[in-house]
Image (cartoon, rainbow, N blue to C red; front, side, top):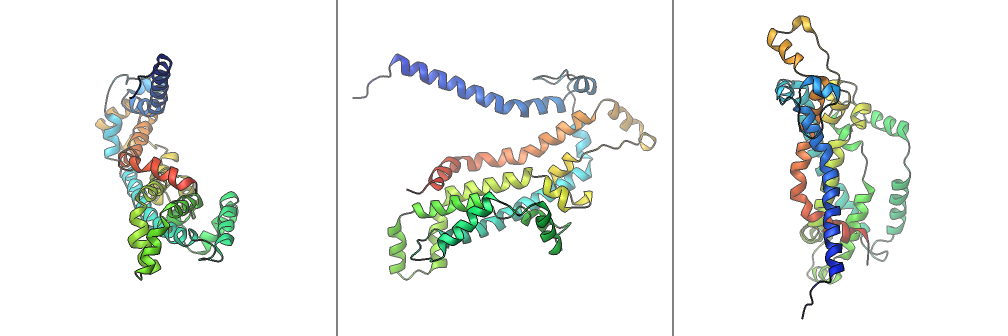
Length: 294
């Protein structure tokens, strides 16, 4: 028979719910404030009068973005970068994690390679050698510099290794008895059984490459090659009133750099916010099973 909760446990549950609601509120607050600023009038945004609601509601910043071709060009570069990086990292991580998930009897140099991976995760070669390596490969000002410049995410490799090692050993032994080779075993058995952790590392890759701006700043010498976050970080609105029409001047008087930049930042957040709910259900399961080896 299930006993009812005690009074103290109910108080604890209510307190926990209130605490989680407060944490969720403070997580959403910056996004909401950015949206409020983007929808406010110029004077209120400049004077810092915007709080939780737009002051002098208008859509002028978003109308301006629709005509900003540089913004959409950088947006497409980021989409291309994220798509390529997700594919490349997925292939490399799975190909590396599968043999490293074996025991030393099956893969003799496993421990040596694991120590190399851990060392590379803790220490890096430095900014200048990293840049010189990419330059020597003639990747500057190319999309592959942004895709490969982040290197191999060792933490993601370790997550996948530990997840593979937690899969039932009996299934692999049965497949070996049936004559299944290593490649078929990895593609047809390990990958389908590892959807949670693979979805988790895909989310990590997407978020990293979408939000990262430093590589775009260092590895591209032209503004036309900037990914979206680098474009926003370097954003400077140059205004030439002599070549502007009367309607453009009217819009300029109702809009500021602050409201325009807030609108662009908010639009830049939408893709990740749209993708996350589809992968969130795999996130906790992939992290917990991939973080430790029983």
